Image (cartoon, rainbow, N blue to C red):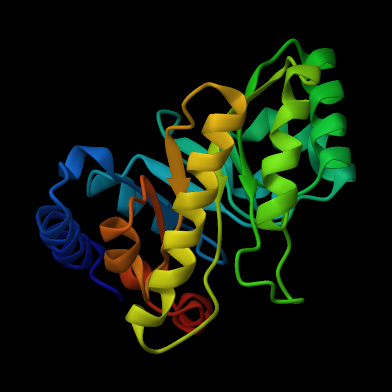
Length: 232
């Protein structure tokens, strides 16, 4: 079994060190514990260690898991969201990290209106240009933020990205820097702050913090490998 408490303590030390290097307070960074393929039992153990914010990649998995987890936990959806899952997503989650198109935003706004709910969202930006990744281009993200007054049920809180996979964390830095630049340009366009940057995963979260991340998404660093999840 993975020792979540020990892993969390090490992660918190690394977060604090990265914040110190960047001249930031550790309170500026929220840890999203990614529970993909891990059971409700593992989530409950993590909650016992003090974690309260969890991320899920799949609506169906979350729909089955969340009712078996402590009621005080907060849940963010961090995966690719299909329009036919929007109704469930807005009922299950407190924030959606990866709104990757205006048609998706339109559908979410409609579903939120029906549910009398306002949903905080982040725009996913494909800063690397990789075809395997979803999201707005940096240019289209800047253009698209002007459409959000048309979606009164959605609160645009910031941007999200995934850097290309690399075993060298430093290779992610240019992509995180680019997202921060896009955020600044979007803020100028909106005339309003966008406080959140969701970037950084288990392999590169310290670099992300140094570049301004406010939400880091960690799974294996806390819980071990997904292969181990299937064995336990």
